[in-house]
Image 1 (cartoon, one colour):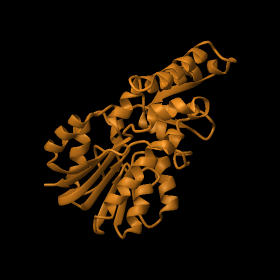
Image 2 (cartoon, helix red, strand yellow):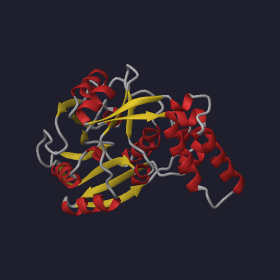
Image 3 (cartoon, one colour):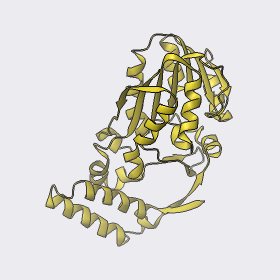
Image 4 (cartoon, one colour):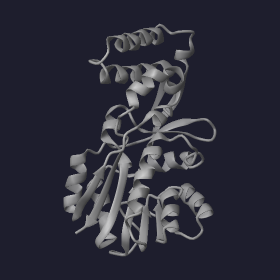
Amino acid sequence: MTRHLRLGEFLVGVEGIALMRHLFEDDAVTAQRIEEIRHIVSGGDGVYQLGVDVPIVDSASGYRRWSQTYDSPGNPLIEVEQPVVWTIFESIPPGPALDAACGSGRHARRLLERGHQVVGVDSSPEMLEKANASIPRAVFRQGDLTSLPAESTSFDLVVCALALEHVANLTDAIEELSRVLRPGGRMILSELHPTAVGLGGAAYFQDAQGGAGVVRGFGHLHSDYLAAFRVAELVVNQCLEPRFGPAEAAMQGPASQFIPDAAAAAYIGVPGALIWDLVHS
């Protein structure tokens, strides 16, 4: 499936989010939002009719293309997720660690710096190639979240970041992550927050050739995670929900360029990441 997304459609969507989030706060701001919507809908100077084809792709296709640009700066989700996850790492003593769906290895690198013995697993050969090239001291294997190439109870720590949204059956994936974790071990999961998903957030990317795409996702709720944790014998240590701030609101693509006030009103304060710190019972 491919969607031809026009600039004006995207901007009106952001304006609508901003309008509803602040509808009862300030008449002048509401009037500004409505005036900007009218201007966009009227066509402006024609720029709002410009568009791009955005295919909805599976994980294999998406991350093959995204691997070329994934480590580029300016990803608002990584900006709020990574500092929180790395702070949790500081409380975990070194030991055997699995970075599941490791991508290009940003968390694997950090774990190595903290003295862990790291195995990274990912389904994307292209992502693993990047990880192998930049982090030679880790061991990287190709594998799927629902069938990890690892022995049971072989890790003290399991990390899975920004990947479970692409898994249809959340319980199967979390059970498999729990299988390779020793009793008493820690599991750190991070994901795009369901509130952000509800406001249109998705795994949108641009590749090195300038093409766009969205990796198909499944909007898992807090209750979905809690049900999966019960099955997988995982106990919640803490649940963290870092919010987008002004810096992340300025990373919202063309919205930040054309309607910066609306982008700020739409995104500042919205929880961007959902992070679970778990213990295997």
